Length: 183
Image 1: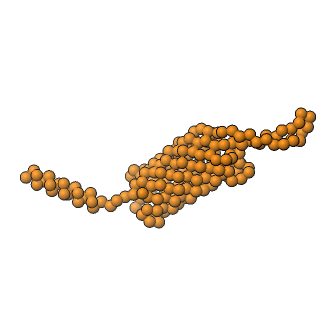
Image 2: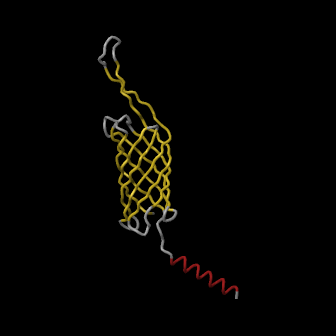
Image 3: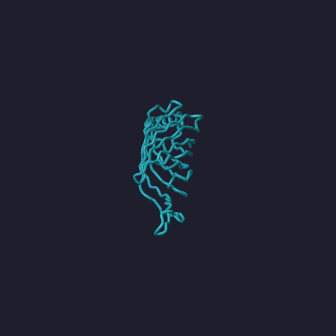
């Protein structure tokens, strides 16, 4: 009798597990956009995000971001990168086609910074020439993110991402498109 009950229980567990709908929990997204750096100019920004949805309210992701100078007014020049870990809270039910997430995180960034110094003669006031001096800027960054996405299909979502970042006592505001692929 115990063997029959065990076999029935095993069959019921198999039937229930196969009857469950498969939910896409892992995702990868590509986020191109621009970043406004204080009042000094605009930077081009691209992110690659790898994340996991733990349940219908919480998710986490790791982000690798790249920035480059788009204007001559910015002090950042050349290439820069950052790596951050973020956690998110989803306000809307995942059954809907839209999603609104609020989150934050901490990371590390390294950027090139260029200063243009004037070289003047000892008795003159007009600079003879300008010398660019490059230095490396690195440190811890903090960010607060608000993003909204809309499902196109079960595997693809598209949306907007707005982030407020603090890096070395300077603030950056990246605004990006989000193209998410559910794995």
